[in-house]
Length: 398
Ligand SMILES: [Mn+2]
Image (cartoon, rainbow, N blue to C red; front, side):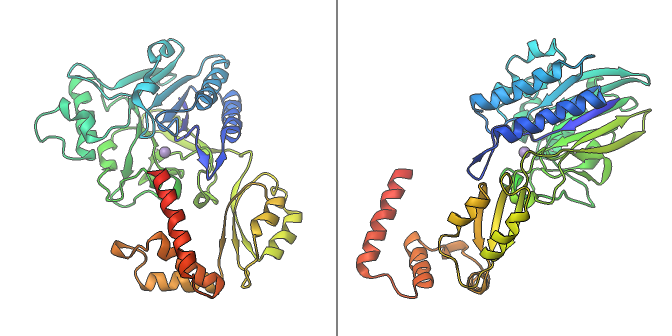
């Protein structure tokens, strides 16, 4: 059984202010090409199909085109999709009964009542049946009504109880070959997943959403989504495939890929990462303004790539973006790393950062900034103008 494992497509996502629709279309086309060449039996998409719970019309059309292109491959490749925390369960579930007639299986909502169970799809290969359990993204509150008082205390007990329920019903038999598709935060006792900036915001910092991999230990393969870097958790068969594109500068060194898993006889598994090549890369560039401009002449990706630029000039250049954007049209951000900014960072960390009650007001922050840049203080009149402007902006954003 050959499996393509994908997750966290985040269709509709922007990178800083850049729209990634072309990049996403490009990478999905590449996945279709690989599917043509390698002929998987099934493509699993482990959640976060869309970036927003209300996707744009364009985001829908990007995913629709992807499914249509896959459907042209014959013999048909099954597609199995679960929801992620970014998806709207209702929207993703739309037309799922119809899609199923075309080998596209969607599980976006957890079981609604006592008679409802996880979606299970069975495919057959030369070694027999493989059962795919499609486990949509859940929070404990989504499934509490299925159990007795006090049984569900956290994410881990919710997930464990949901699987036990399938076993009790006779749906899940661990002596058979079983694949789990899920979108949750899994960690092994010995190792927690490596995180990056693009998934941080949606993950509970306190670790309340953590589920130990012992809960899924009897599955032959767990196709996981939620963490954006490809990696296995504890064991090779518990695996995050990561996003198909870099969605933050912190991912500059990631090699994005399709995870291809081959299930053979029970207990036999082979994993291969099929690398994906993006339309435009995401990377960091560091140097003085003149050094960067000089090096750009030999930089083949300059015109396309999304770059985060760190300027190291001690004498800070005036409006560097104007000249830099002539050679790098897709600048994500420009930051300055020199003795001035390091002194500020040092002072901040000595003061414990702007935490707790120490966060400066916008006027205070600007006053400090003005002093640093101009080596003189704001006059009373200037400060009044500034306060008026900030008040105006705050009114607009309320
Ligand atoms: Mn995600």
